[in-house]
Image 1: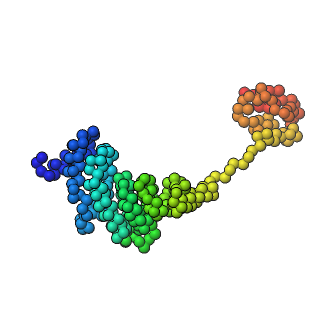
Image 2 (image 1 turned 60 degrees about the vertical axis):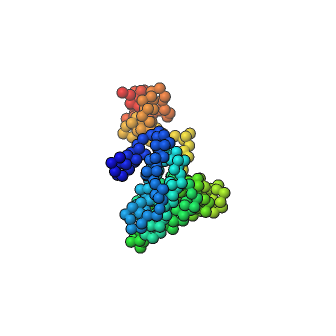
Image 3 (image 1 turned 180 degrees about the vertical axis):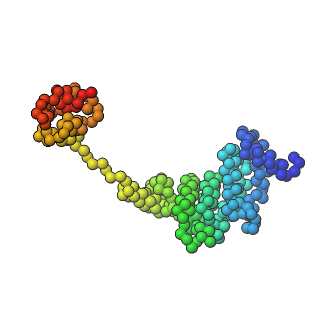
Length: 280
């Protein structure tokens, strides 16, 4: 390899594009991408520290582990240190400066790779107390910001290593669909918060749902005009045929209606087949 940059490029290509690497090659790539000191704390003034750095690091890990599930087996201690360092950077910046609605995705990446209950508990506490960026704190959080936080809470709650204490902090922020999974949780605080969210959702659905259709008596049909009323019409046959559906009009010759109006206002007989429908 000509230089460190070329070596890093090849390492990234192998980790991100190659499948079925044998253990020795995969371990060499992981050791190159995440060396032993990769988990050291970043400089707060570094451009890639804080939320941005955590987003890049955790997002990279998600892709690598999805493609190479053996990564934790071969390089687990170092990868866990990297995750811990990224989580620390993430929570530090959010507590100090707040978080933008576009940055909440980092919690989903963390939930996909973190196996430490302590780190998940710290992330949950940070999320539950998070605010918009300091320059926006005079305003209420926007609906998009709140929805993004709820999605981040859902991701952490679905992590099987998330402890009950962390779930209790997340429960009031969960989406309705996710809360429904925790209504029978063993922890009473989690269970109560989830049940409250689900009950509110059900009540809202019942309150805003469409009104139940009125029952219709199928045995009650339209009221057909009497002969006396039809006698007052200019065109009795047309007035009577208006009470028939189109299909019934077409088949009326085979199913005549009663009463049958037989006399026009002038008193002369109508043709039998024209009494009801006016045949073609």
